[in-house]
Image (cartoon, rainbow, N blue to C red; front, side):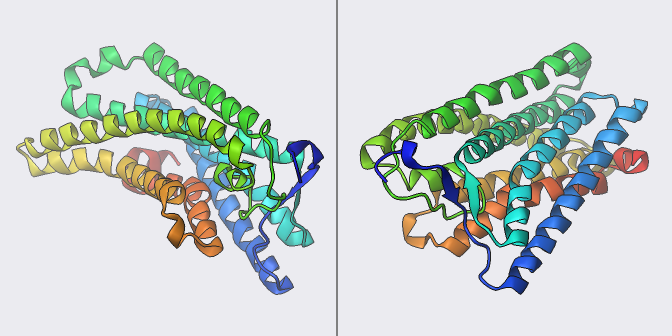
Length: 299
């Protein structure tokens, strides 16, 4: 195929060849998606209806739950449909829409996790300024900025990706339309244009990561200076859920995109994509509700 105009659909990765295994994958995805819908739905309902949870950290947690619901609803339903009906097709427009919304929700989630890190930093390291710097208006602006910044990033990747020439067929080695897999179909002269956009996004992500690391270094230094053991335990209990969610999201996503080509394989790519795109939306509500007594009581 000489260019993308001759492609009307893409072929997604078949999760299994045998019919029994296809149905098993359908049941697994169904269970994970139902767990994500139930868990995030309960978090959203608890924060929205519980007036004692109307604080910055729970407001950002509500936004995180919305991004989790959006990301899992973008990728999993099509994979479930393909497993159930024994097909791998996705239309050209459907692939573009899936890529856009996945990039949008993933970008928003990373921004929200960075903001939540700032919230933890202010509450532990600068508690006297917490109420003034993180008022309701400031929180609304930060959440709006997280969602607004995700839109141009997703639009830029999608528009650029689907305007490039594809020379290596239309078979994707993934169960959803992922940028790294579409890159493998590019002609050699088109790859560098998308690589520049990826470099810009990676630089912004690296800046957020440096801010997160710096913030947690300051947080742990402040916590270790707390004289009472009960105070240290309470401070750690507010940070550990966020740190666990952040570590799972960043480590799996980073390794999925930056792993050496020599160790790349279809099974490893599939496992990593599930680990950073499907598992976190299902686990995030559980991690936060288990460690947070206020949220657990509200649920």
